[in-house]
Length: 131
Picture 1 (tube, rainbow, N blue to C red):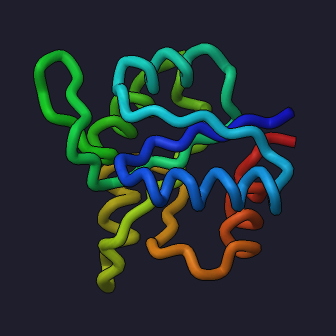
Picture 2: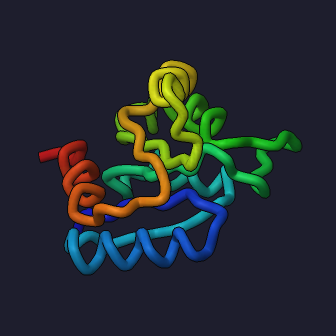
């Protein structure tokens, strides 16, 4: 079964995304906010895609606070993790934010929160999954 990693600090969002992805998408889901664990999982090949919250508030790596942009930059610079697609999730949906966040992070796509159209959410994720 295809597994999606959710890197999100809001428990409600984790529950909603997990339910939508498993029920509508037929996908397996893992969740962590631990940056070292995210990197290990991405390197392992256990997940087909990562949903990355831009505004993580409790994620620390090597003594530094890390948001989703910085974690994505780490993943995209890592030869063992760089090919795992990353979709940024953010409530910051002002004009120009999509391009700014994608350029800064190297992420593959961007979804604004709240996610209202669950089928479009699943479709957008499935479009980036490897065949």
